[in-house]
Image 1: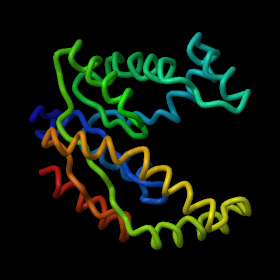
Image 2 (image 1 turned 135 degrees about the horizontal axis):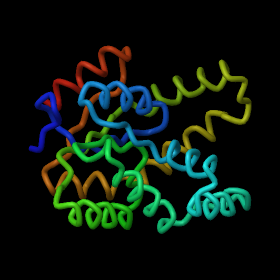
Image 3 (image 1 turned 90 degrees about the horizontal axis):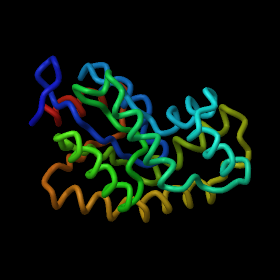
Image 4 (image 1 turned 60 degrees about the vertical axis):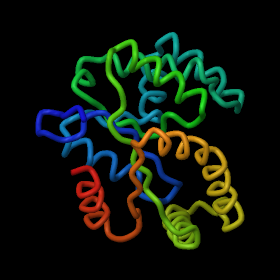
Length: 195
């Protein structure tokens, strides 16, 4: 495995269903590994805020309430991965989401002469996630996050990522980590799984 400055895995994809604490764990894990946490959401917001050509393209789709096409997302990710701070490694959060994006990520990494070290899937019981997300919705006053809406989001996630999980498992680089428990407990399990 390729290693970051502290002797650990350097090129990581973190996957997990809504409510599994992926965003929190991505930041903690990236800090531990000494690599940037790269979230597609952050990349989109940065490109839109900086009014880059890609950001303006993405904005047109978002304003129309449509998904940003893969080619725009892929270009933003490729641009971010070419940044100097990602030269020794990265943690991708929210990408890839489709088999086509997996292929594109493979091409990006092949062109740079590197490959993924590990794909970590945070797992969690669906009923526990529903409970957690309903609690979050109540705290944030989001009445549109009903149990049926949350369950559907979890189904869509499972449908979209099942093929990716199988693909990475067939390559022998998938690690599953239980995403339930305290933030510190999950972080400890993640670090154990990667060591």
